[in-house]
Length: 446
Image 1 (spheres, rainbow, N blue to C red):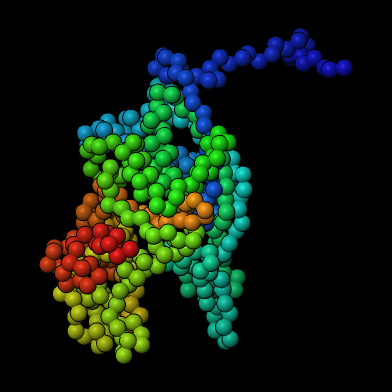
Image 2 (cartoon, rainbow, N blue to C red):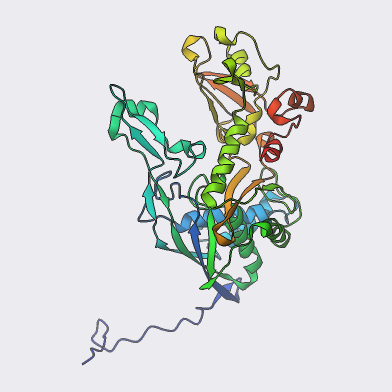
């Protein structure tokens, strides 16, 4: 016999009322139809961080809805923020109306976009670095190139002082590989173009977790509402991205300092690779080679001095110079590699023999010490398991937009520094091929 539910007075309980707004929502005193989509994704590169603690993977919450909401907000600004004639307050008001903001009883600001994440495969944890024990020596961290290129995974490398202190018990945080998840988004039909623009830009240029601008957590959309999405052919990727930019990116003026896309961005797509990992490795290695170009050493048997001007400029500013580097190779008194993002830590291998101590290039003001790299590198999955590499430069950001300029921090001393080059200065720096735009020179190097 089925038991009839009762209330606290023993009377038959009324069934819950049917909510007539399940497929609509009242916004500004109007009932607006809602759209709900479930989009399925797989990560084609490992997930860096993504858990409740910054920089650490969490198998229980590999993908967090709050993180995705933040990504969608960013890519909404990057794709749609040009329609406010450069007015930051107007853009922020539209952003808060769509994505929500801090609410008060007098002024509730709920998000019009609901986000729900269901992890369908948490993936497997992999160590990007392993400790090797050498006889009568402390352990050494060795990179696992099969997990991630060491040039983009270096933040996960344990510090030498930690290894000396903890030995083989040194903690190395893992990355999560082969993660899959479903994202269910619900939003007003009147905001469809805005939300789909943010989703497209995030799926194309972004990712989940940390270090997405260096290719970690790169996405592949596999299905929408259960209908499979076929990846593009390698030769069609460029055309597909251009079509998306024309469809979703506004052509206008962005507020100052807001990173954004444009209809014709500074972008490169590499040749095809056998898989996503190969495309990612190719781009990471190209970045390493470009940033670390050196003159040949003794009989070219080992790397010589840098072809970039920063080492000599640091020696000039600090007044420290080893006898090996008594003469300057560059007369350019700039830090052009700041274009790739800040801070940059410079460590001289001969610092105990006269060369400068470890120094840090950063923004001069506390709120601008860091500069997220305007350069995005990531693989894009293509038909047949192949992949291409995508490199794009976000506009509206960079060293020219750092408030107060740059400083070189040396212990308690701070030296004013500069990064922007003239054409004449660029002509003296071999890797730039006379191009004063460092990021454009790198794209030409790909």
